[in-house]
Length: 297
Ligand SMILES: Nc1nc2c(c(=O)[nH]1)N[C@@H](CN(C=O)c1ccc(C(=O)N[C@@H](CCC(=O)O)C(=O)O)cc1)CN2
Ligand SMILES: [Mg+2]
Image (cartoon, rainbow, N blue to C red):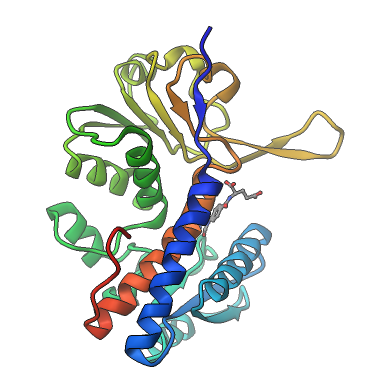
């Protein structure tokens, strides 16, 4: 039995952040100021609070300015839109990110639509999604771009490979499919209504699992030698009473003997999300100031 490689997303992300930090220093020399990222957190969701803290810390470590805006769960839609408008107008702010999910009474689409597309470092605005779809230069959602970076690092040229993306969200599944199409993969997007998912997955040289269902993708579904990117972050009960642990959307212990390579959870795709956010912020800052973005980012 051969054992596939575990892709170290944490290490790759650290390398990317170091590269971004070099670019940030060059930007600051040329522009006379640091790139700035504004992060908006609404409510008390503990996981969101952790991610936002981590984003702020890594933004500063990369040499950028971090602006954090925490608002109560009770904030009204109009007040949130006013804050976005202020950030759109603030010249120190190159990137704006509203942490998701938002409370149920807020219209997420309206909030995203209010962000200046040039500052939309999450790449969620329709203008950026549309540009990505037609192959124009765009700010691209962080998680799928991070997945693509890991895939290209592992496989090199992806052209002609059969890719199956499981999940059709606007944040991961759809942009992931667009990115893989741009790399000339043959792309299938599978989802909750897909019939015989096991045999669809079995065709794939590349599997990207982004369904949010713990260990749903079984080892025997994977074609021998496929590369698997596991986007899932699911908290499940641990063996020890009262404790939890994280698992992905793929049954990794089973899949490991089928794959060429696979991302672990934690330590795979997750760390790439924040590293790419920093990359997108630098790219947005360069574009806003008419400065060339560093090569290879
Ligand atoms: N506006 C956005 N909201 C959300 C996004 C996003 O990209 N933009 N993505 C997720 C949350 N997220 C960043 O915001 C994020 C999720 C996970 C990780 C990460 O590093 N995970 C670790 C495990 C962490 C743990 O122990 O709980 C890993 O996988 O190794 C970073 C960022 C939803 N919201
Ligand atoms: Mg809502």
